[in-house]
Amino acid sequence: MPFPTTRRPIGRMVPWIITLPNDLYPFGRVVAFRNHGGSAEQWIKEGKNVSEWPRLSRREFHSTLDNEQRRSYPVMTNSTKRIGLVGCGVIGGRIAERAIERGFAKIDFVCDMDLEKAREAAPGAEVFPNLSDVAARQVDLVVEAANADVMREIAIDVLGERDFMPFTMTALADDDFREAVRVQCRKAGTRLFIPHGGVLGLDGIYDGRTVIEELTIKTTKHPRNLGLDESTSGVIYDGPTRGACARFPRNVNIHAAYALMGLGFDRTHSTVISDPETKQMRHDIVVKGPGLEWNFMISSTPVGEVTGNYTPESAASTVGRVIGADYDIVMA
Image 1 (cartoon, helix red, strand yellow):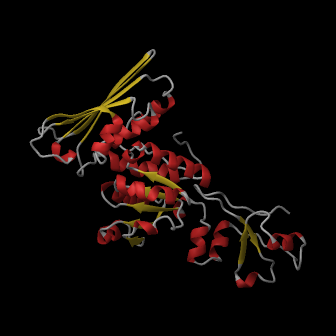
Image 2 (image 1 turned 120 degrees about the horizontal axis):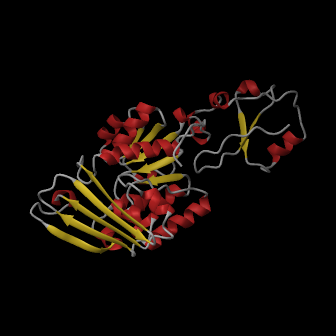
Image 3 (image 1 turned 135 degrees about the horizontal axis):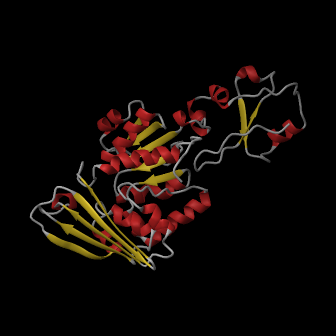
């Protein structure tokens, strides 16, 4: 009789799940091991003391486990998939709000220095301030919505265990760090998801990157949204996107996302303009290649120091789409 198996959660290998025979089942114990895992499998193959093998649904199986074991073998339904949030500002808070409201995931933990704010955003979630505790949490997906330093500190350890979705793209402008991320993903069988956040047209940039020859992004923001003196006016950066990411790691994540998915950080051109009169965050994107030219503009009202109005809602929907397993018409 074939052994029953479970689905593989995002970025995590689930062992074969074998139930003990009926005469031991009242104890509610379960043996879990990988295929060719040793004496337990040999015992089963020999059929010792086996009269009938009970068949458990995933929910029934979960009922036999304690809380720690449940985190190791999550039931694969949208309502019980677990995500962890690192950062509970405008984006992290919206993700928590929508996850609870729409039921696409359970917030397992929130890592943030403001513990009270984190508790308010995700009631019932475990809240802690230490980044060193993040990677060990048994979740389906870790979401970073903090800053480039935090993203860089946790990425490798998290990807060693599970999938990771950062919303701070500028950290990936570091070639050595980006390569280390790729190596870790291949080694651990995990993925780093690039969310589009406030970016439009990212799928087209990625799909057409082999024929695109020119990609430029011009961003115009109020100086306070760039961390500058309120009187600062004019072009404050004009050059390769790599330099913009180094100078404005909190402000040009859109530039970094386009560079990552398109021509890279040296061939993508960034211009950053400070305008004390503007009330919008505006991005003008121009893409050129043989037989093609795209021009589009993104503009939104700030809802935080560096975040536009559209980005938090887009972020929540992206997390829901990645973590979800709906059998429905979905965006590829």
